[in-house]
Amino acid sequence: MSSSAVVLRQRERAAAELTAPPSPQPVARPDSRIYAAAHPTSTHCVEYNTGWLKLLKMGYSVVRVLSSPEVPELTYWTRQAECYACDHSEIGRDGVTLFCRCCPCPQWTKAALSVKNRHAAHVCPREPAAF
Image (cartoon, rainbow, N blue to C red; front, top):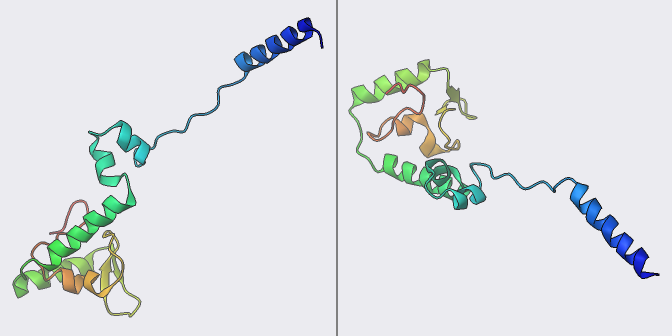
């Protein structure tokens, strides 16, 4: 192959690289680790950037609520009445236990509203909150 053919081929490659569309760059979603690294002061990414942080926050919330003191009976029954009247309440698989669909807790015994409504630290997760 002659040197002029080699030079022509190199020029064709260079021209093809210049006219080729740029390769797409990954977009950093606000809930991704890339976004958290690029925006360390963002409160959005601190709270939601990984599943572990969200799980840790939920675990802390469960411990905080279940270790808080119990409320008086009147407060408990007022909360229960609010929950039964709410559109976001849901009867569990056993057909008796009441759960809240706004709460991210799984349907287990400690997440039942009959348990959570007895504790002072429990607040309604709805917007606006009922109690």
